[in-house]
Image (cartoon, rainbow, N blue to C red):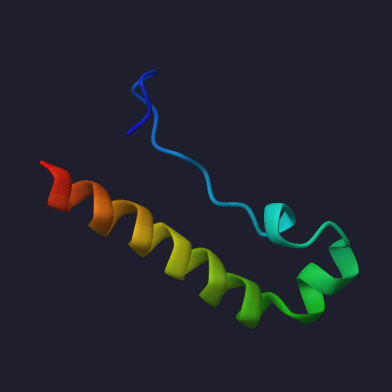
Length: 48
């Protein structure tokens, strides 16, 4: 959780700027975003 109290947002466009590629490769990008989300949250959980 950020200092503002909001959870971070994971956007496919952060991983790929081209909307056409985001649509075409959504499965790969969602997997990458999910892996990042898990790494961020699992690492944070171990710090508490």
